[in-house]
Picture 1: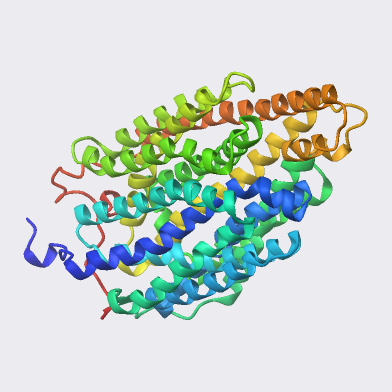
Picture 2: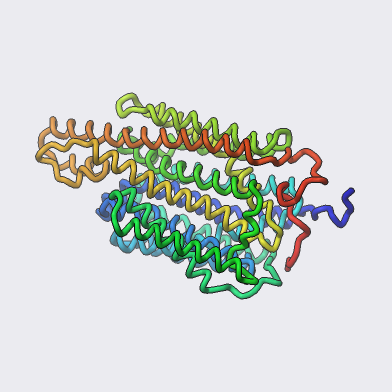
Length: 524
């Protein structure tokens, strides 16, 4: 029988206002992702990056976030999660200004890298603070659903706001969005957010930090290059080196009194399954989003503003299912709710796998809406399963692992599936003799090259072939997404055994139920 001492503290008005503050960086990061994908054709025209540089502009941000999330999550446990959040907000604002005024592809890649490094401080800090501010499992579920909803709102607003800005201003204007949002966070954060840190945490092990980066970044680089150019000595060696270093990293964590990553979090099958499912689903979502946004503009012929409006049904579907998922999980097992959503996503991916380049964009928009609608339960409930299984003093590490799965999945999706789509395009496009060779690298390049071709017949032939080849890439990505979604649905339904959140859980194992222990180390 539980006692009052065992009852989690209920969140009050200050915590809920604090949640509103934490929504700001979440909103910004999701806007930033969706805006950038819409800006790809404009960046291609303005900076003339190579196909490889364009992919780096898109995915260096996610790669560095993924590389530094574990470090930043643990650093927040040590120096204070609010402090790290505010430091990251200031750095992100400065890096955004650098991106605004980038005058070359290399400069934009550097600015995006700085944004990724700063962004790595934001997401684990927000999630860790939510864990500590909302000790009651049901309140925490609602708070995380609100957090996910703000991410979804950003996805919804990004295409519309960004599309409008791209319609009337140059591509660099889209990065200006980060400056006022980060400024508002810097003003309101110290007033409304409490500080939390683990008073018993040891010093940050710099050797572990170096090992974590040396494990993650070479693997990402190697996989990206293999997907782009096929198997070669350098990328294969990079993957092997990264995996070897990962083994050394794990061995070091087991010997440290205060490890950078608490491996004890991986003891439960529920935790491991949620992380893997988030990784795979975000991988597919990242590649799909990049391809669909380019399809709407370069195959469908839509303007940035119009393309943004066509993405709204998917974003609103994600918002709706993310908000409703905690309610459904109070009556049904969370695993069943997540699995049902993944089946819905599989239907969407199947629609994308059968789209063509001539029948209009209705099927692509509908399929993409199904993909996002099915992702809402996973993002809301999967994140809660991961972070809710941690003790409060482990909040930063758990949040960092959740975000690592999400961000690494998105980045790998852009790199792997984006590169796969590009490979399918290059293999399928047919170039007339008078067309420059760069038209065979990307669809954006083909559209640009067509402007300099005098023969209307050759223009028609080039664009028809290029759009068909690009759509073939979308079909392949859709087929992969279908398989991944169905396999993930089965995995979650079989492994995750959590009861409905509305059921009594006095007898449940806290490690499996997602209910954290009593709060520790809180400061006003």
